[in-house]
Image (cartoon, rainbow, N blue to C red; front, side):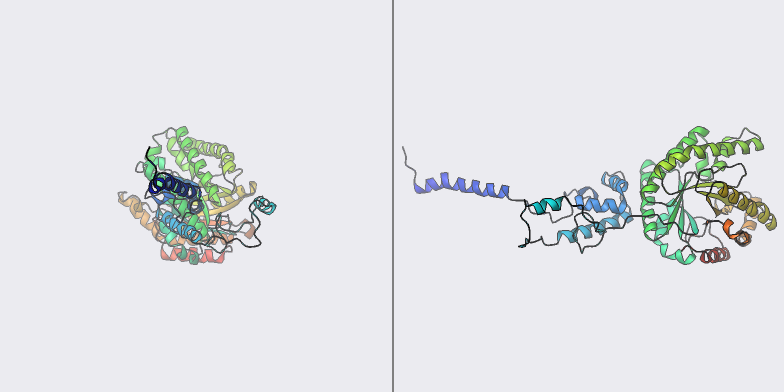
Length: 455
């Protein structure tokens, strides 16, 4: 038998044991703390986000938006990219902090002091979970802020990114509230599911930015114009109302999550139901659309109240003595020109009657009421309209200053306790796709807004 030399003994016995000892010690040593806000490297920061980065993103853009982007259901929007950059800065700041050094006063890891500390409820610090003091605070939670007087500029949801870019221009105009007209994508054949999800995320991101800038929000579900009408009239009335209810409840839940102040489950429903009643006489048509509107409004109200805790608006279009906004917090009728060229007729039969009905119904329901001005000039939407129709629209546009002046004069003519709690105006937001008011009409609205209290 061959004897082991000293070298053989070292290579075969000592060296393997030494290597095993090193591997054992390395394997048992605690892993080095992460120096990156990401936990994997797929190339998509929303997918790769570690726990702290994810927590920050959820707080910034909302759980639903984060999940949609992380699951690649849609691409991220510019506001979401900005939120990502902010969150990465916050988490990186934390990771760069040196670890805390033990001191003589530090208790032993298994001491009663440590156990008691673990059971303490930490005081709110305004920071993301786990971030040490002295780092940038996490975004404040959204809260509802009700203005003393609602000075609202109406915009459509697709133009919200442009509105967000120009928020600093709105307060000098007296605006303290944004009225968002949100379409029903189901009634727009040009929008697919992916586009719908992207638009919804953009709307929610815009709402967050608008509220962070100090504006209140009136959110109105709108069934759309002529293009949407061609789609929804393919349905039965019951199918149409089912779609509207489903959309309204989904948006009401989101409005609650984003602490929206006012929510209207449907915009001017009577005029939409009018399209389903072609086989009736004009008087029967009017009666039935009022009955159906009242029935639907009362049916959906408790469902909305379950998911939305702000103020619920009955947004009703043209006034009618038969409409009953029972249980709603705010009554809002629209004042439009109705092609009335006689100004005194407009004052008497349109403005005063609308105010009278609004005041009475608000009093009966212990509700607020607000006015809504919207003047559509048809050639802006229908360039193929007959020439006589277009000519009349031009005359209406020229009377716009008088219309707005009369509406404001009639508000001031009311006793103060009977005056509205707000006014919504279309075409007043800079750069809006809604046909803009004339410069002199904007002056009338601006002066009125600035004279009211409430920001």
